[in-house]
Length: 330
Image (tube, rainbow, N blue to C red; front, side, top):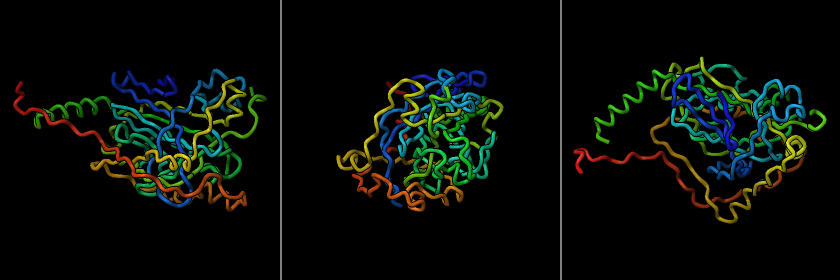
């Protein structure tokens, strides 16, 4: 079951386990320069608003009505990152235009291990873009369908789907319970309407390069309950379409990376010494970024794309356990 609460998608599987729940939201962020440099993680600037597609179905294309899901607004060339939150283990597939963001392969309705085409929660706290090399992604950036920029168009030659696709599979209950029991033993052992919808829909294209690892599955494919999965389509529309369909004003445009850097505001890095990163995708590595595609099309330079110097980066690491009193003394 999927529930929309406070602009977050809640994936709940009480039929699998009472604790089997994860949430996903989409964070507005700086579009980093698409200049060939590898940048640290930019900040979150608040969540994108999400609305039930069914509430506005009469104003939307028929194809959208069939697939359901939610709608969200994005300005052209605006960037996003996907925020994951879960204590229970999940395998989550992320696609844009039905192209896997991790492998570059076409969408399949199951998990694949070789190569791994999913992120593992809670080990993976977020995903900012397409995995092009080990430890490097290209940022998710919104562009109109039909102009040749999106990953979907570059790999398939068609502009059909757009948007984002998500599917979440919880860990099998018996594996979860066994893992919890093992961790408990370890703790003891160590003692611690269509007319209203005008213009092209939006898809996601590869932007600037960013340092980010997509972590390898430490549990194995058999851990995931693929009989119980929930899938959600996130349709993207530009600011004009959003207002025409929902009657709501769109979010204001985010600051540029150049403005942010000029004020000395923080950038981030995430480090997990115990996790191994998956290799990047050859298919995704070979795609043209937005700046490269614009140049090849003669569209002129990408706006607000000047190289920036980031201030000292704040390291975000996995939490460390607090050492407990081995003698349990007061």
